[in-house]
Image 1 (cartoon, rainbow, N blue to C red):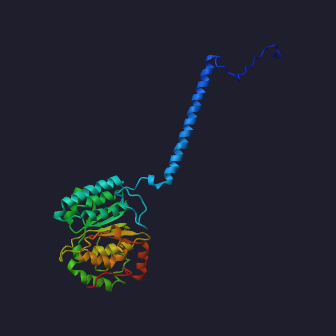
Image 2 (cartoon, one colour):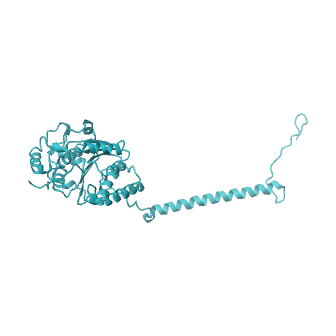
Image 3 (tube, rainbow, N blue to C red):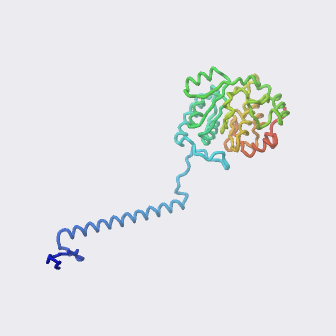
Length: 330
């Protein structure tokens, strides 16, 4: 092809036909193309197979992993939908060592039985991280703190020296001493229940500000900032109540019932240990109500009550703790 200045322009066209022996590059290019196609076919086949397996597994629940055996299953209409702060493996380990220590020291008293320990721990773990209030310091104190990792755990005890001792053993422990004996003794159960019943619509009503309460069962000398906390879980395991002269747990149970009903629009869990004793059982039936007792997570010596937000609203309007009281008469 000639241009204006008689220059020649040579145009090269790629060959559309490559012979088997037409140069060394032709055979190598054909081999690489074949390998590439094989990889594409293999990847597509693997993707299709993986998708098919996932579809089949999702349609057959039998292939799913079962829930961890130590994980407390949420109750219908449970009070918490959050995932626990600790994994099931850590929960198992904590319960194992706590239950072992409890069993080895069972003869000395002062510790929860294994069934009570596991029931209470399951409730705390299910709600964690949360606001946890514990009446009583003891061997289980480190367990409650650990189970509520990331939340706030506060302890109230009758012995100021024991509070100081536990604070030295557990740095960062938030604990306060309370003069429970100044409120009542276990032998005063009948008289105090009668007073509370007579003042149910006034000083001893189910929804009120405990800090300014004149009810003889209301704990109104706690640190002021504790009254502003919406407690998710309250565990009553103190003070002592094993003899008539002991401080008894009437005031803690009454105050826990008021605190639980004073939460705005939220449920609360209240646990009462030593439920087989007269004071604990009578006060729980009077102020926490048998109708609120969660049978699935209770034992003969540990009662678990769930105070629903709706019931708390109703109590504020009617002035009654329970719709059907089962508390004994004195």
